[in-house]
Length: 208
Image 1 (spheres, rainbow, N blue to C red):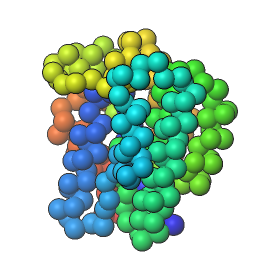
Image 2 (image 1 turned 135 degrees about the horizontal axis):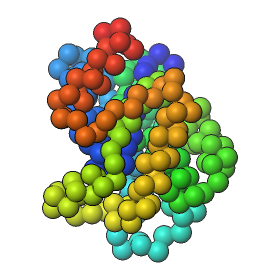
Image 3 (image 1 turned 180 degrees about the vertical axis):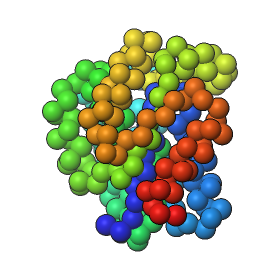
């Protein structure tokens, strides 16, 4: 494919969504052909699945149902949005992708990692990110941000701290194993510093 897929990963309240949006805005200002997506979501079907997944009323959702719902939302997004836009040669920025499932359902829920890897291959049709930014943050710092946010927390955000510690450790393990595409950034830095580092990395990769 001619396009370039950039993904953003990190635990909740790491600041990854903000950085994904800032990069998108910067590339739009430069009139680059770019599309911004989020996971789960990005299509009508995927957004409906998102509502199910994040609804706090579904606190008893089985981990197997959870991973299959995330995968169903991703399958639709890949087919309907990611592949067509990459084929057009566009830059696609995605706030979360399959690494989130490996970290949250694999390390967090402790579902078999080999099963998850095989599931990813089926769901994504082999489409892997060219560049992944992991905005790394200690769960204790994320908790402080969560308490200051004064926002409604979704089902995953309400998980206990040890769950988020496993997720963070999972992300770091994934980044070490796939260092060719991962850039790990300290999420405790000022927002502007993080934004600048991300943009410099993107410019270098894309020869902008």
